[in-house]
Structure formats: structure tokens, C-alpha cells
Length: 143
Length: 453
Image (tube, each protein chain N blue to C red):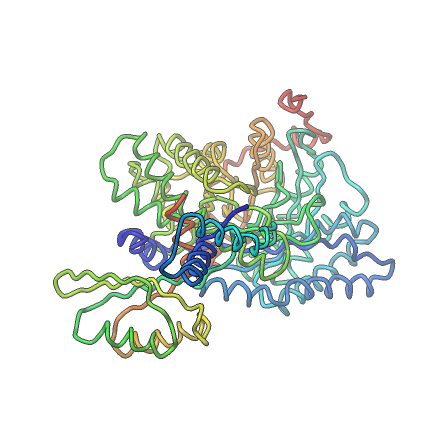
């Protein structure tokens, strides 16, 4: 039986809650065994599908650097409930490049809407913004 | 960060600057269940089925396109070779079928539908003969229908009666579409060893062993390869091959990913990735330019065949590694009119028809989009088809002829279709004929190569 990270976290939480200060190796074992029993065995249906689309998008922006670009982009993402997972910036003389990994899973908008919003921002600031699903980079750059 | 800065920028550079796009997502639809003794009912069945599967083809492709930021240049449909399910119809009825295919293609918003085809490598059925008879009119009376006829295979030999028939069909098509630079011929392909899962129009058809519906993809990307070669600088050929392989690997992976997504949206199986390098007339999106970047003064220079062989082989090696579903033609295309580097070589007289023929022996797919003088006789065209087919026959590979005897035009002029079909300078053809040889008829027997069991 496979235990996912998520399940491990749950187990730890249960053990912590039940034992509090008075943890002994024997009591931990007991609690863990009880908790594992509660977990149903993983059937093939529960296994993550390898081609399941995640909500992770790579946002790339570049152009002539001027103040407020990162602020404007992140503000727009925040308004749409998009989670920024990672962000990196480089500048070369007057040009900048920003790359972000964002997660739109919890956003009420879909990728198309967010792209449309970003196009507006790009036009307004006279920069380029591209949004591409992470799967593309996985396919092209990872074996 | 999970991805290197360079990896992400490289991807953006490919899609935005180097014309990397998916050349075509082609929806294959079986028409085997669309037969009725009444022609009108048959037409309705065909129409309904294409609409049923193809209705959202364009929409799905656009959705995937925006999801990944990689453009899908064309959306096409291929159908069962029309002569097979509709064998009992007569030529005029086949033309009606062509028209309904045209109408269905227009309705679902695609530019070409392919599969007005017959497979006659070993002989003709009555339907095959009627379909071939109908081809010139069918192509003249429709805009979107593409036709192909397979006249030879390594297993069967070359049907020389069919070769002659097709040469005459090409001449007649050129005449009937003379007002548009004989454009009908650009939609007509003569094959040896045709493949059943080719996603590239005009030669696509949905083979009889294919499923009910399937999605195949043709990738593109000469621009990406060209830039990688230029960047590599002065390296030896093994290193150059490595450079080509790395780029092809990446674009094949992207192509397969996107095709799978389109197929998923359709709810139909994904078929194959055709890893052919397919040029477009856009500047920099040219196989000819790749050959020049490899070190040739111009396409047609001695060394061209060797360079092309190496390019083609590198593409295949990388494509095979990148995808488990490689199929279709999977080689480099060298259509003259659709490739700026090839057009310029032909215009300067550096590329002759004979050199082009030699080049086709090491890549796919044959003499493609080649314009010749309008007064070229059917016998000479038949000879060209026979020669090209012989290359396919003996080397167990696909070869094709898509030749345009431009009505009323001669060497020094050109045919200009614009768009993807491009511009073809009219190339010189030797006037000596192999007519008597072709005229003997019958079949060139299958070669020893066919006895592989």
C-alpha cells in the first residue's frame, strides 16, 4: 500500500493531537496503526493520472524596463485569485525578463480569461506577456 | 525555479521568432458506413458524419493553441479513400460526392479535405476507374477537395496503366483549372507506397485499417532547425547532427502533447506524430535555407543529396526517441513552391528536376509542387511519375509526384498561388520521351525487396 505525502501529514497531525505531551514509542505505534487502518487501500482509480492537466502556467514577460511592471502584473494576478508559486527576474541594460510559475487552480477564471487580462496589461505597459501551460515545458525540456 | 531561465526563453524564441508551429492537426474520419444505393442518401450520410466529428475541430485546435502558446497552422480532415466504400458509383456520381465533401469542409471551417483517392497499385476495380476518370472535373468543380492515387508499392510493383492514366488526369486537370494557374494539380498527388495515416494534405487519406476516427498531427519547424544550425557555428558533422536532433526532439514532444490534447477534447484516439520537417513560403521557414546553412552554396550544388540525407536521418532519430507514435511520412519535405530557399534555387537554375529527383531518394516525399511547362506531354509526365515511383518501389519508401504542367506557360515564368501553396518557377523538362516503354502497359513486377518473409 502506498502512502502519499498528504496522508503522512494527516497521520502526523492525528498522532500529535492524540498524544500531546505524553508520547512514547509504543503509543505512537498504536496511534499510527489505528490511523493506517482508517485509510482505504489505493485502487488503480485513485492513482494520479499521469496526463491530468495541472493548473500550473508559466508566465513570461519581457520588454523595456520601467517602474511598476511587476507590480501591475502581480496585482492583476491577485485580482484573479491566481497563486504565484515561483518568480524570477533578470535585467540586461534597459531590458527586463520576468518568469513566473503561477497556479490558476483556485482562480474563478479560466486560462483564456487570464490571458485576455494579461493582454490588456501588456498593451497598457507596452511589454510582452506570454502564458503557456506548464505541460509544454515538461514535454520539451524534461525526459 | 523548476525550469531554467534559458529553457523558458528558448521555448518563447522558438514559438515567437522561429516559426515553430504545429503544421496540421488532421482529423481522420472513416466513411465506410456511409454507403447507400441511393446517391442522395449517401451524400447526406457523408455530410452528417463529417459534421458530427468535425464540427468542433477548429474550436478545439484554437483552445489548445492558446493553452500552450504554440500556433496550429492548419486544421484538416482526411477520409476513407472514396473509391473504396463507394465503389459502385459512376464518374458523375463521384463528382457529386466530391461536392458534398467540399460543402462539409466549408461548413466546419477548414481549408482542405483529403481522401478523394483510390489505391490501384495492383489493379483497378470498376469504382477505381470511375473515380480516376472523375478526378479532373472533381478538382475543377471544388475548392477544398484533395485527391491522391496510389499507383505502386514495394509489395505489388508499379501499375503502369495507372501511371499513364494519372499523367492524363494531371494534364486534363491543368487544362480545366487553367484560369487559376492550373491550381487543380496542386491538389492531386500520385503515390508509390502511400501511407494510411499521413496527416499532410494533399496526400492524406484515412486508411481502411484506421479506426472510426483518429487525430494525427504533422509538426513543422524548419525555422527552429535553421537557427540552431546557425548558432552552432563551425562544428563537424557529428556535432551538427546532435544539434539537429536536440531541436527536433523538443518540437516533436510539443507536437505530440498538443495533438493528444486536441484528441482528448474530441474524445477520439490520438494516432501518430508525423515528424516531417515541413516548410512554408515564409522567410526563414525553409528546408533549402537549412541546407545552405549546413554549408552548401545553394540547393542543387553537388553535396545537396548528402546534406539532405543527413538532415533527414537526424530528424528521424530524434523524432523516434521523442515519440512512441511516429508515423505518416516522417521525413523532410522539399516542395519547390512552398519553400523560399527551393524557389530561389529553381529560379536561378541551380536546382534541376533531375537533382530534385535524386534528393527525393533520401527524404520524403517526392517531386512535390513542381511546375513544368504547359506543353509537357502526358507521356513525359508519366515517365516522371514512373521514375519517382521506382525510387519508392526499390527503397521501400513513400514517394509522390505533385506536378503542375502550367497551362499556357513556359520556362522563365512561374505559377503563383499565394498562401501556403506559394510560388513555383517553371522548371525545364527534357523533351525526350519514354512513351513506348510506358505504353507497353501492365505492371512493373514487385522487386526482390518485397520478399521479406
